[in-house]
Image 1 (cartoon, rainbow, N blue to C red):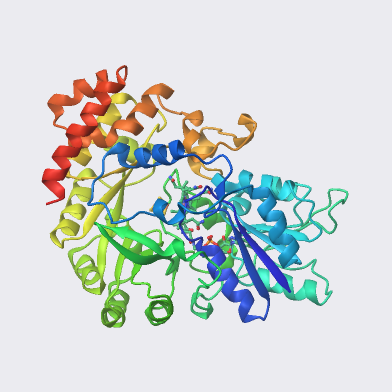
Image 2: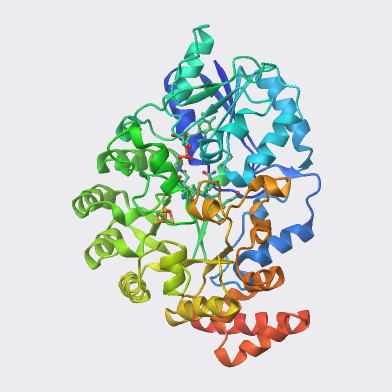
Length: 502
Ligand code: B12
Ligand code: SF4
């Protein structure tokens, strides 16, 4: 059967969607024909050079923290024509003639994906899966254009659906699926139970052949590598109030003893070796929620298997899992970058609002260990937290500064459905008439700050980090004076060039 995957994201949001790569591989294993319609490399009609510049400036608040590479991802799309996305989609469907359209969606790209589907008069069936449909299945299945919603893992549910559809079998009992028997039905929906978790070691190697090779563009500290995101585990044992994991754990309670599961080192190494040989991929970003959670013995085993493959990798780690021994072994297996969630410098907010039980001292110790091994460190920070004041944001900035973090990631809190913050503060996506995209997260503002303050912090967070505290009053005045802002950026750039680029 012919299945067309859809990844509807912003132009140049080029991070390979892990769900699609594994599902494509699974479907091919069962003999289905697969294609991908992907907007990440389709330059839209309204694209302009100005937009390109703005995107670049937004990254790291306009400061270039690392040596630039000889060329950038943007250079690789210069000669691409501007196209009408809907027309392209329509052409693609006519040529490929799929029997099923399979859309993967997070909350932030769900509406965009749905809009695209709505614009085409489709004759085939449509299934939506991914984290957003998993968390909000009712609102997704209620869309007229959608026939099926996959709750949770699609690795077994999707091939089963394809097989049954192809053979005209009764699909009504397929586990993990919400099913609308007919498009124009009377609102009747079959809601099936969840199946047990898939055995991660039984999964095939992710399929990269359907993706634009520009996805592999990976700049790192001035050099260009071929790299991808790859997951080696599923789940997380923690319950941070702004994250969907707590809700997913509850939802998947009956699916197996352990929500947190690791792919065995042998299988991880098999996948990496294959992708290295076939696509020359040498840079991996492990997209696991917390990479160092893996037991130490397994990390040793992984190191023995990965060392001969000579790869580089980056990963996200929970500071509570950082130990000298684990970092040492990660370094030996090729770790060159780690990101750590600080979220806020205020311990009380971190504990009471975010449900993260870790002290500043513990974070400091963790970052110290990572730095000692020469691993590049970056932090994740959130502003706009419930009850947060400007002074609290300065605490977060000061804490990053104390840790000598050169380049911090900062976001405005987006209360995703299913998270405890979403529920406790009675947020509703529907209240806004549409699902706000990530760059409109200020709409949800649960803090004591004004929208303007949040946006200004977003723009200047790294400026505060780089400039000495005696300059902070100038940053404040840059709010009303763009010229001062530009001057400060230039000054910060000089400091960075001297300090980190040598
Ligand atoms: C890698 C990653 C990214 C990558 C790539 C995203 C992608 N398209 O895969 C990038 C860097 C782009 C990214 C960005 C963001 N991300 Co992100 N990301 C992840 C991460 C760490 C791993 C995703 C992954 O590859 N998982 C492994 C695969 C195998 O699992 P999967 O994608 O869930 O797919 C399975 C099922 O969901 C299902 N499935 C998926 N698609 C489909 C489709 C069909 C048809 C079917 C049947 C089934 C199905 O089957 C798959 C196999 O079982 C997850 C956390 C996590 N561990 O899942 C967060 C996560 C998805 N991200 C999240 C967030 C918040 C973001 C950002 C908003 C972060 C930010 N502050 O900017 C941005 C949004 C960017 C945007 N433009 O919209 C949240 C999503 C919350 C939500 N409600 O949407 C998550 C869940 C993190 C979290 N714990 O809160 N992210
Ligand atoms: S540690 Fe990270 S992935 Fe785990 S629950 Fe907290 S925020 Fe989510």
